[in-house]
Length: 311
Length: 311
Image (tube, chains in turn purple, red):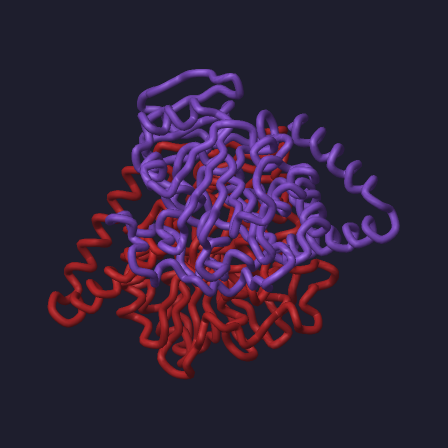
């Protein structure tokens, strides 16, 4: 995911090395970022900066709607997103569908500050394939769906394709929201353009791109696609449900480290180059809907997957 | 500046390697970030992401005041900050004081897209020491001073100490503004706390911290200290002089790549951990002013310099 460059963390000690049906799992103690979780050679999280990713992917959608009640997490087997959702007292049900049980077990052992998310009695864990899970989900049952997937190679490849987003939209209630991990503006423009184009076709409410700083991710940033289903309008740029002002948000002494309402709003400010690049996407998406049908998008998607696989 | 980790760019070809009285200078062609300038082993800029740094350090101060006229750049020998200042038609005089002529010569040869900044007839170059230059500057002559220094080891060490900021303040007109490179929120909290404490004592207008994404800098971000001298009030968070709406801002076809007014405002949104850490600084700064005198600050500064040198 990071052609022509490398980011190296000094290893103090390898704590775990194993292999599941899906991927290689590695945990090590680094000298300055605490413990590090690596899947198939790609850093997934470190103790030092996981707060930025977990808090943003959870609170960007949940703080954009009033009183979220039923939430689904896809991926997120480390438990960090669950930990953040738990801060919201309005939430009564948290489903999580993680494909790889080994990730959960390894995090139970080595990342107690993330795994703690599984301890919330509102959490129901389903180990299995997300596409299968969504197929069986009741239509319109979720207020919010959070896709905390790994990069779109390996087990997560299906999770950037149109049928997947259509199933997400089906499972959301009208006005429900999706927050999907969406790579780096500096490095993966084509992938983001493709995901945006698909989401603009699928979600008839609003579709926006947000980003934030996560030092140990490629180029030091990570993006999020925020989509709402037709129904109650959602203004993602102006959080109406600010978690930092709510009672119980500190979650038994675990204070929020990164997220706040200003950071939320700031995440939607895009660099000029990105505004230009993403505005051409919107245009080609409209074109493909009205004149060219779906083939163009499918071709874009194939081209993108080749690009990602080759890199 | 990056203990326990490394960021590596694949070298296609070494283009230049030399040594001035002040530092080692290296230029290489990378495989995915274009040409790279390295001083004393620290990446200063790459073709791919220099836009973020140069545009933000120039436009954050210049877009915060109406009709800037006379601007001083300290450091910035690559020319990139000059290139950005040139977009402002109200500016009539641009002074630059760079200590190392070799940096300028190397950029003339290898970074024409940055060195172009020196081609503006409003620019007057002074090769020499910034402290000496400021001592001789007329009091209150600048609307804005931009300190584009390298990290505070080597030739730039003096540039984070109190006497330096006092000289800056003296050279600014009432209501004039300073923008100073200010490291990474993720890595250099102590250094930022010290700089903030000193600036809060020195600048009686307003003092704020802003940050932005620059992938090839440590932890993928860089910060800026924005200070205004007592006089006309300056609201840094709400740019009143938006460059992207001004005629001639594209500077002969060089469109603005990164900066815009939303990115400007967003740069002041700080993560919760940083708000907490920097708020303790403000408190201790007040304490040291009223009760402890300057010694505490000096001790902090010495401790910080040792820390930086040791890393």
